[in-house]
Image (cartoon, rainbow, N blue to C red; front, side):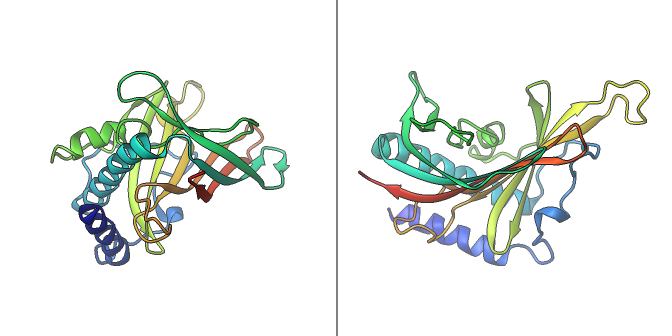
Length: 235
C-alpha cells in the first residue's frame, strides 16, 4: 500500500508540474485526424516519465482488478455522436470479468449491451502494451507500432493537471490519384485520461477515468464516443 501511495503522489507531482513548457492540450498535439502520420521516434525523457508511470499504474491495477475486484460493479456515462448527429447520454452498468487463460483480458461486461469501451486497458492488453513491455524493463520505447491493418502512434501529455495519452491510428492511402498516395493518414484517435491521484475514494490508480474516440465519417463529419467513469461498487 505504501508503494502504491508513493506512485500516486508521484503521478500527481508529474501531472501538476511536468516539464517547463511541455504542458499541452490534446488539440495542440500532432498528428491530427486527416493528417499524415509522423515518423516513428523514441519517447522523449518527458514522455518516458509519464509513460513509465502509467504503465506501472496499469500493472498495479491489473493485479488489483484480477485478484480482488472480479465481479464488482463499474458504471460509465457514454455519449455518442454519430455521423448524422448526437444521441442522449446513457449510463452503462457493468461487472468486471476476465477471460480464460494465463494473463487474461479483463473486461467491463454489461448484460444490457450498448456501445461502449469494454476492454480494460493494462500493461498487457490495450494501446500501451507494446510500449509497457519495454518501459517496465527500464528501456525506452518507440512511439509507433504496427496495429490491425495500419500503424498506431502514441503521444503522452499533461492537460489541466491530468496525465493523458493519445493513440492515433493510421492507414496507408491507396488512392493513386491522391496527393497522399502511399502515406499513412490518421483516420482515428483515442484520448485516454488515467487516474493518478485522489479522484476516487479508494485511490484506484490506473483506472481510465475518461476515453474519447473520434473517427472520420464518409460525409466529412466526425463521429465521437466519449466514456466517463461514474461509479464503482463492491457489491
